[in-house]
Image (cartoon, rainbow, N blue to C red; front, side, top):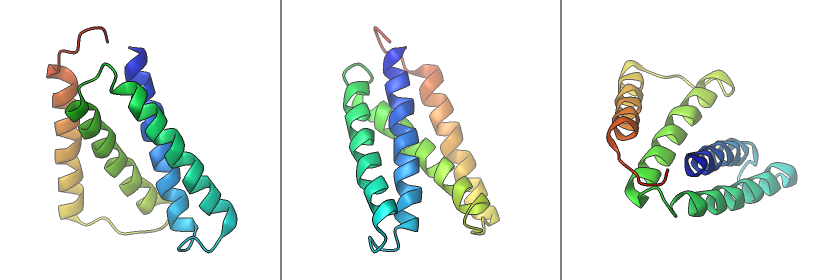
Length: 110
């Protein structure tokens, strides 16, 4: 179970880093730029820990899928970006895929 926790930390760090990337204004603002670098360093460190046990394809699918969903929500709520019907449908498919992976992936030792 701790490896899924590592994956959750990697996802959160990736979402923080990507949000800061938007605020860095092309790396022209120092504080958000430093947050991007630190967040992505944490992301890849914890992702590397997670894939010690979780299969690479599963870990990456969950990491990327949940990252897309969370970033889309942050873009909508925080940055005022619009989500059309097609975007919402696509996000729903991503969530469904992540749920299916979680339910049907047998990972020994997790």
